[in-house]
Length: 196
Image 1: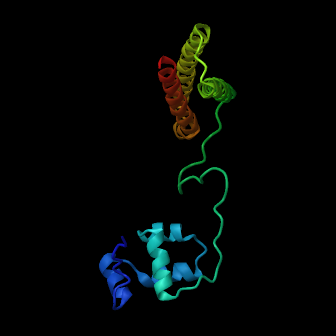
Image 2 (image 1 turned 30 degrees about the horizontal axis):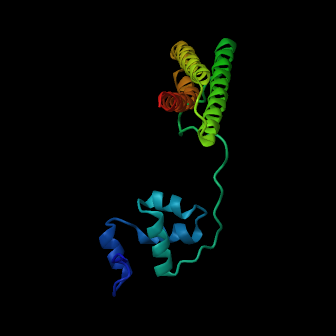
């Protein structure tokens, strides 16, 4: 079932676009589409409309892009304007961060290995022996303790850096926080699978 598109009805599409999006500057939108180097998605974000509507307006208006899109820079996101450059941590802070990162990597690798082993056994259809179940339970308990220790180390590093390096510590710990959440979810999922 097709939806009724208000822009496709008879009449002037610019008037209907103005009714759908009050305050939308179609001239600026056309300029960004024709002369800009941003993607349609970024143009839509700039003007507060979806990428689909940008493409629809370009099609109805006959707007032809004169400039190709420009790739976004790779790597870290640039600092917001006006924020100072984060100061590098002390050698002990950097060493602690490296250890925490390595521990997260080790934990991630061991969990992948355990998931692969469990998945292979499930695909074989062979029942799990008591020794295997006990080993996996021990591994999960060890992983949970290691995760707790890594979290404690990371929290201690964050508290130590909070004074003069608050912004830098927050930026550095964002990745660790995401990894921590993912590992905790994976351990929880594995423990549920081991119980079943």
